[in-house]
Image (cartoon, rainbow, N blue to C red; front, side, top):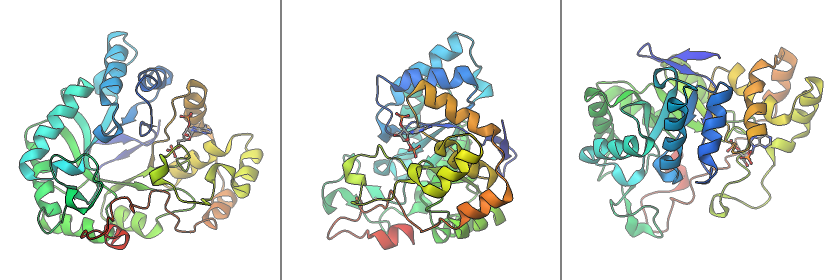
Length: 316
Ligand code: A2P
């Protein structure tokens, strides 16, 4: 499996299993079947509501000698209601307990958006905390503490713009090693990817298949369906593969990490096999023309009326 070297010398497998939207009851088997066919990287988050089940899948896989802990890479994320510096390590310990692990390979600030401690997902502005009250650099100091305590090997961010990354880089002791963002042919993130490569920050592509199973509040009307794009379909025919496999290989070939989600054993295997496809220059050029800067996960659910957050400033 291809891997990238992070800015502290640690290695991250370029291909992993996403678990956003993977239902408890299905995700344990998804994790087990992924690890049994050779996945080395699982992407998690407490807000996905399934870390306990992911943990059961991991533990059973270790007990059944399918894989050893030190040979796989596990990522999780700090939820928005734990942005105060003193809450970071506590939140991480809870995630470790749920995942039944002693350490994480990578811990990310999930969003550049802060909530009050007792709010899991705000209905209105009263549940949000402005970043002027809990600056991202304060949250980052909590992340650095997690490294100091040996609870995590690498720290990074998610859904961060160049400007927000820059602020962290300038003011931090430990540089972020990862920015996990939505990335696929309709949202190619060229500028951000170039910035990240230049600054030795890896980029993980989430929603690489267009996340068609998103909940309704994260959906817009008349969205383009990535898995049915005609250009991708033609390239898939040429390589006797599926559109999903082309999307996965495109992400790998661009030097990003990619984490397609599936709970279906057949699709988990199909996605794994995408690593064997060889896209040529012509394929990559054709896919390059598909960019429309289209976000499926546009952050509008945090841009609540009368709050300090807008869709523009979340991504700025
Ligand atoms: P399922 O879990 O039933 O396989 P994303 O990774 O962009 O969030 O996309 C996840 C969505 O894509 C889920 O609905 C998932 O369904 C579906 N999916 C995953 N792998 C494939 C595949 N190889 N072909 C078609 N759909 C897929």
